[in-house]
Image (tube, rainbow, N blue to C red; front, side, top):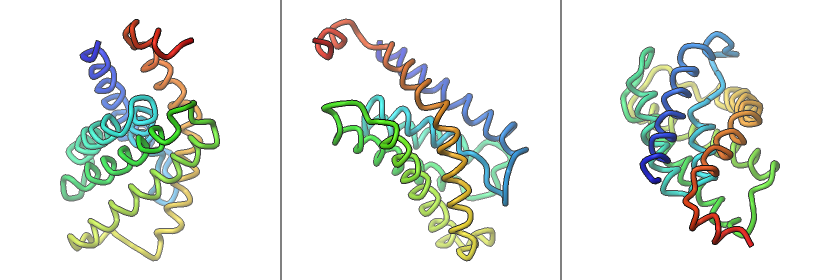
Length: 177
């Protein structure tokens, strides 16, 4: 059963990277697109916990770092998404008595967007990446957060529903009354 979960998570991440790098780049505003990989990472973290969030974030970020048209130092997205996924998983752990509501999911997506974009930009500044412009950070953050919340409306329920269906029978009996 765990192999099926891992396979599904890998499939979600590969589809997200493919769609983000090939389709969503056509609807960029000010160079910012919907971060579909981040949304999938947050969905996995909210459905499985901080460990899954960190691992999925690292794997998804590494895919973004090496898939063309990557023009930055490898590892920047991996670090940013691993930390954002871990934080989203901690939010799930804190609300483990019940599901995270729609407002909680939206706030988690905005927090994940802010954290990942800040870490990505900060590591770019440390590595002297000329494309990092802190003067435009607020504008890019606002656009990215808006895009990501809209994308999360579709992606997060779908990923969480599928991951929730892949639960061993003994866990289902334990959770349900």
